Image: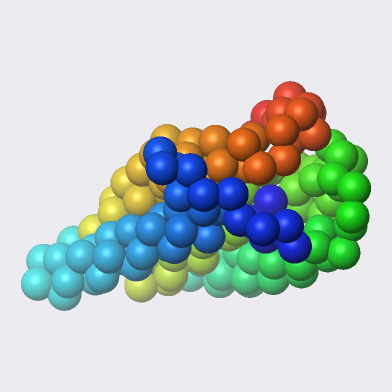
Length: 160
C-alpha cells in the first residue's frame, strides 16, 4: 500500500514509502522525457497500421481508472486502525501489490502506442523494469519494516 495514517518509519537504508515512490515516479518522468526527446529527433515508427490507436486509448482509460482506484483504496486504508493482511488486500491491491506503478506503466505505454513512438515505448519498459526491481523492492522493505507480519502475509497472498 502506498499510504497510511501511522507515522512514517524512516530507515537509513530505505527512507520512507513516499520518498521511494517519489524517486520512482521521477525516474518514470525523466525516462518519458528522454524518450520524447529521442522520438522528436529520430522519429522511428513502430506500427504502420493506425488500428493500434484504439488499443492505446484503451490502455489510457484503463490505466487512469487503475491509478484512481488504487489511490482511493490506499486512502481508505488510513481509516483502518488494526492492520492485517485482509486490510492490505482491498480493491486493486488484491490483484497486485503495486497497482499505481502498473497504471503509470500502462498510461505511458498507451501514450506511446497512440503517438507511435518507439523511444517512448522502449524507455517506458526500461523505467518499469527499473521501478520494479529497484524502487518497489525498497518500498516493500519499508512496508515490511513498518507493518511487519501482516504485510509479509499479504505479500505471500498477492504475488504479482
